[in-house]
Image (cartoon, rainbow, N blue to C red; front, side, top):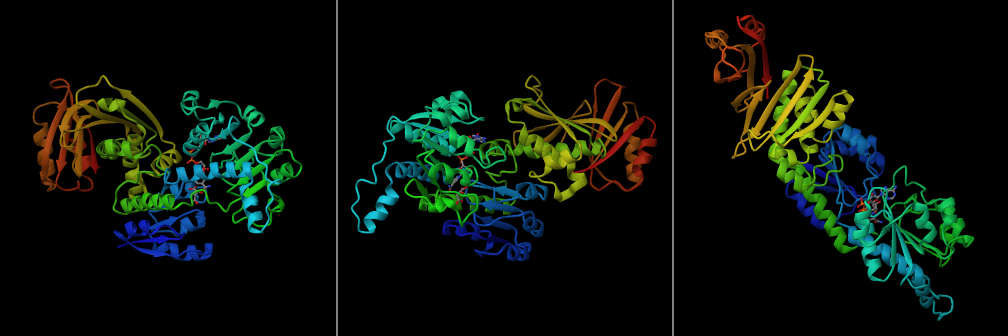
Length: 526
Ligand code: NAD
Ligand code: MLT
């Protein structure tokens, strides 16, 4: 039975799902060195934001197949190191969207009305109504930086409260922003005009300290800023100075450069700042959502099924997977085949989506083709996660093309590879029952199912050649399961595709090439 380690607290609903397929150990608060010591025993690791999954931990996880992050941000996982080792990293992209958006809105309103400090003063026995004169958000301008899932929800609710919306997001179209009711503007304009600013982007090299002293200096003295995204997007030292000197009116932070927040000049400030301990996703609903979402994906991967939200398998969303799964199997088979026909050291792979398939997303099929292509070299070490990276590191150039006009089958896939044995191509299609058919080899039409051991010849179409090859194989005790010839013109060039019951013995290929009329021969093992 598989073993799963859960190293941060997650909802019981997730543990119950994992327990269907694995032995689950919950061990929280492990020191990094303790995790390195035990991770080698586990097939899967499930975390929240508390565990840092470093390269060292990934290297020690010799059995690891999947790392599941019960939340959105995977900045606590060394994803490139996991990708290199073929470990799937999954998250829950939507499970806590509403929780995080509502926390940002709560922070904005609390900051405007000094709720935390007013509450604390009443609890101290005071009745001070003068110190807590707030500001209304109605008709004020909210600047949303990062208009993704959380940013969009914040914007939608803020609009309903009568706020005017500006947004900055370099990866969102003007149309999309307008749909949400936001005017897309440049960052400088947003920070100059906004009364409230809320951050909802990931922490990347571009966003680290995006809000620094210079940016803070551009804001209105009445501006209030909220960060429920990631610590370090705001320069905390610069923010403390800006608040102290009254350059801006307030800030509410849920996330910090270093968590838990230790010594910090922010802590000495008064009612102009609100600090919460990374509570954005801390609702009962969100914790159940993310635990179920990620546990289901871990269960699926341990059962050999694909994960719906893998962050290191681009383009494999759940809807796409469902539709393209049979074609991915076809792509992988064709990749294995063309890789062996083209010999080792493939330099170029052309993937062409034909007929109805041409309207589909090509990326999953390219990944599956590369997985097949690299199988000969990497065996089980290549998977959907690392196939693209492995191909890139081997200098394999990939070209994707589409041709909807090719309609010999409803949808077909054509792979052409150039390697040490020259350029070869294979085309395949799926029959109604999902069975794979090879429909073309090196430009010659055929109609054969792939089989484990295959022999391909390029020969002249002339009497007696099939008999000679049959006798030769018979003399080596090789049984032919099926055979088909593909040719374009009678007595011209032709290919022969043979399915064999056994692998071809050593040395026989050179004998086959000596048969008069046979120009070339290749064996393939699928
Ligand atoms: P998302 O991927 O849906 O949206 C992120 C948006 O940021 C995207 O639209 C992207 O185009 C934009 N973006 C990227 N680089 C940018 C840049 N340089 N400037 C401006 N915008 C940029 O993600 P989401 O689910 O909305 O999450 C947003 C953030 O909230 C993430 O950092 C996530 O980790 C964090 N988060 C925090 C909590 C919490 O507990 N506080 C909970 C959930 C998510
Ligand atoms: C997230 O990225 O999902 C948040 O940081 C929430 C969390 O896991 O605490």
